Picture 1 (cartoon, rainbow, N blue to C red):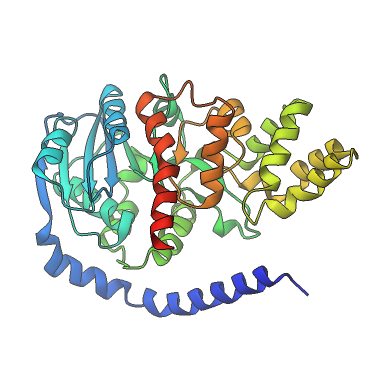
Picture 2: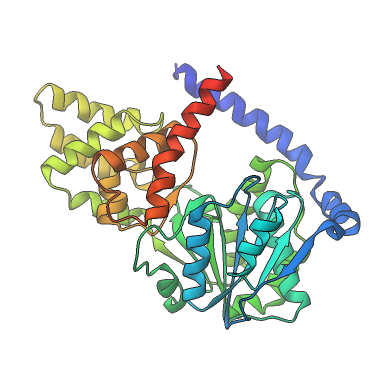
Amino acid sequence: MPPFWKVKREIRRVGRQATGIMIANTGKLRRLKYDHSERDRIQKTPGKIPMQDDVAVLLIYQPEEIPASVICCLEHLRDKEIATVLVSNAPLDAQSRNQLKELCYLVIERPNVGYDFGGYRDAILELFARGISPNNLFVLNDSIWFPIREGCDLIDRARSDSSDLYGIFYDDKSKQVSKYFLHSYFYRFNKRIFESPIFHRYWTRAPMFDRKDIVIERFERRLTAYFKKMGFTIGARYSPEDLVSAARSLSEEELRVVVEQLSKRRIESRPIFKPAYDLAKQNGDWQTAARDIIESSRFRFYFLDTAPIILINRLRTPILKKHTAENFQEQRDHIFEMGYDKDLLPAVREELRGWNDLIRANKKKTL
C-alpha cells in the first residue's frame, strides 16, 4: 500500500485537475472581459531609459516597498544595454514609481489579473502596439534573485545562444516529450520568434485565469511545448544532466554533505537519499549508494532547491529562488552555514538573510 502522504497528494491532484478543467473553460471569457473593461485601469509611466535593440519585461509584485534586489536587477539590465518594461501587478506609490522610472523605458501598473503571465501579456501587447521589435526579448519576474553576484553572464549566454526560445532550466522529467518545459521566471525570445504571427497570436489570444495553479499549468508547463511544436528551437543554460555531472565531481566529503542535506529536505528528496544517509551512519558503503542514486533517481530534476555545493559552487547559478517552502528555507540556511553567501551581491545577501526570518515570523503569527 502506498504511503498516506502519496495517497493524499494524489487526491489533491485529482481534485485540482477536475476543478481546473472547469475554470480553464472560462479563460477566454475572462480575457475578453479584461480587455474590454479592465485594461483601461492600466497606468503607464514613461521611464528615463531610451529604447534599445534588446528589451526586457520584468514583472514584479511588491505591494509594499521595492526591494533593493529589484533595483540591482534593473541596473544590471541597464548596464547590459537592455530597455526594461517593468510591470507591477500591485499599485506603486509615487516614490517607488519615480525610483523605478529612472531605470526603465516604461513602467506599467495593472491589476493582478492573470498573475505573471497576465502581466507579461500586457507588456508584450504594449510592445506590439508601439511597433517595437527587439532583437531579443527577455521576460522575467521577481520570484528569483537575479543577478546574485558580480560578473553574471546569463544575459550574454542568452544573447549568443542560437535557439529561438531560451531559458535557465529545461525540465524533461515527464515521460511525454510534449510536457518538457523551461522554467517561467526567465525566458529569452529572439527576433525570429518575436516577429512571427504565431507569437503575436499566442499573446493576443492568451486566456486569463485568476488561479495561480491554472496559470502554471496552462502557461509555464505548455508554453515551451507550444512553440517547439510550431517549429521553434529551444535552448537552456542548464539541463538535468548538468546536475548529475556536477554531483559526479564532488569529493567524498562534499558528497557526504549533499547526502545529509538532501536526506532531510523535502518529501521528494528525503526518501531518495535517506538509504545512503542511513548507510553513512552505520559505516556502510554509502558512497556507492549515493552515486547510484545520483545516476538513477529523480535527483537530476531538482535544480532550484538542490544542495548549495552543487547549485552555487559547481553550477555557479545566476539565480536563487524566493520560494517560501521549507526546502528552500533549508537551502538558504545551508548557504550561510557553508559560507556561500560571501560572493553574493550585498543586496541579495541581506534579503536572503532576512527572508527566512520573515517567513518564520509570519508563520508564528498564524499559529
